[in-house]
Structure formats: structure tokens, C-alpha cells
Amino acid sequence: MPSMNGWQFLTALRSLDVPGYDPTIFIVSSTLDEDDFETAKEFTELTGFKTKPITQAQLAEMISAAGH
Image: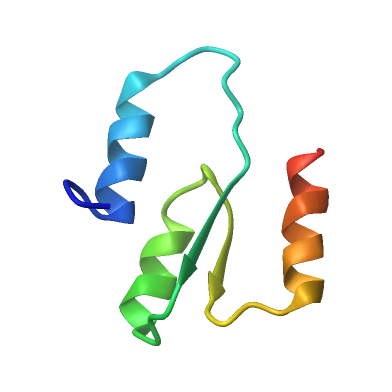
């Protein structure tokens, strides 16, 4: 994203505090930084944090999760 990173986006989304809004959000990243994995745990809005490349099985899992 040109104007913010994923963590900034999640922080901005959280600040909106829209009642009943329950999106399915996955971060897909090439990071191997343990700090990013720990930061992901702080965002209850996240459904998951995946590292690239993702497999077809992981993609299917994410699509299934989006269907709630």
C-alpha cells in the first residue's frame, strides 16, 4: 500500500469502531521477522497471518474462512 503499511491499516480500521463490522482479514507477507508474527497476535481483527508463497491449500482455507 502506498500510504500505509498493513499494521497502520489495521490500526486505522480499529479506530473506526463500526458496530457489527466483522471482516475476514488475512495478512499475506514475505516477512520472516518474528516481531511481525508477534505484532499480528495483537490484532484480534486478523483472521490469520500467512507467509508467501501461499499454497493452494492455504488459499482454500482463507476463502473458506471468508465464508464464515
